[in-house]
Length: 216
Image 1 (cartoon, one colour):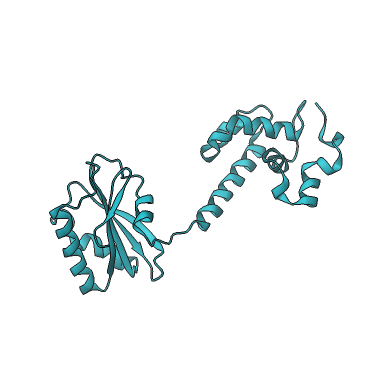
Image 2 (spheres, one colour):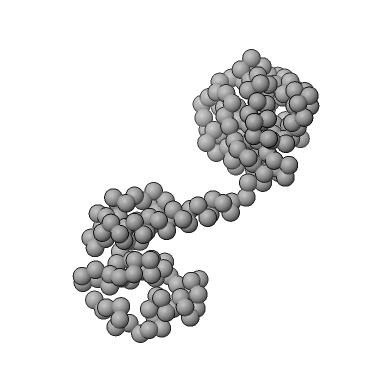
């Protein structure tokens, strides 16, 4: 196995990054830069390639112990990889748009409840720019006026300084046709929101593959 110093300088990961920028490097080359050095009988690029081949599909859930089990990886190198993955996830999460403007976006953010066999009533708390402050499951069970009380919806909205909210709930039947209870709950909460100064922008019924806005 060729040592990294035997590879022409222009093809070495660090030198390549310096000349062409990170976008020109392969995944294994980027990881090689993080690792810094290889192990006995395996140069750093080959080590990086082996790690990626074995773990690419589970990078999001890799643990320190997973990597330490790799031949040639000690705690220090394994920790470096875990730290970089975590840093990348944090930057990516911070860049994700939290703006909610359509029923389709509500449906997309309700992936966890769309196929549930129980009804989940969810509230999105929004700022003045319609960015999501937080999302909260208010109740689980058949939607009705006794289960979803205005206090349960608007108390957290006021605590979060929400300017408006969006309601959503799933229909286990798969139908997105609003029931009489759906309409009654929506009307009652809308009236309460008007009194409290927290506008209800929409109420979206979500199912596995479709959605419907009650207020559109």
